[in-house]
Length: 287
Image 1: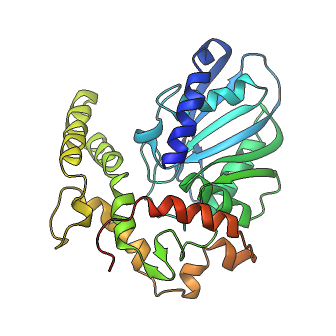
Image 2: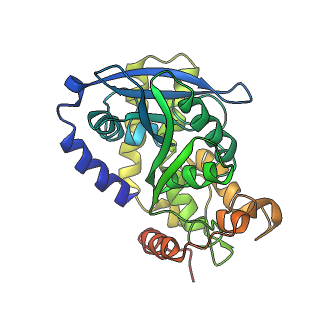
């Protein structure tokens, strides 16, 4: 995440005039099962058919939700300033998208559908590329495994091709420390979704989510404390821990999501970069 955020700030600085040169519209894009995903479409001011840079993001509230908002809004607009259509989609079960967030496993079908939907639009020339890093790199690898006909390029960064090594697992062992730390990134998003579903006003949502951020700042290391009982937000991070540890280690079901296992991909340099990135997040819970 640190690398992604750093790149985002650089692009944000370059996008200060984006709104004057780019149009942005939003759309709920249907997947094959009828679930609709919130999607922002940044287009050059001049009409036409353009190649597409597609970014699929699970960190809506954290990194950008709404046209030209936060980090990813302006940085996606930069693509449109340079002759592309930039498409920013919130993954299933996050922020404004429908459905339930099931990390890794959901991204193959959704990634394929997103690429092919993008290629079919009137503003697209049918050439689609995927970009960005970390979990946004996962969404690229997983889509690529399904071989969408219109996916011509991808640039996954600071990500991995084997999720049982240097991601939610390390050397095949579930990494509880990382999963708890990573899970915290989704708590504000989950609270936001739950409050909106109950009819809370925007001010109420911002107040209650803001209270979470205050509490989180006061307890930065709670995910490395024992015993793991109670704790504000643990009910939200629970599904992520289950995804990390709920499958037998290296069983065929869980390995089906691993790019290296599924496609024979061996990206050792990606593993090394991911190992350095993940090491920054390690806390207690490790002998």
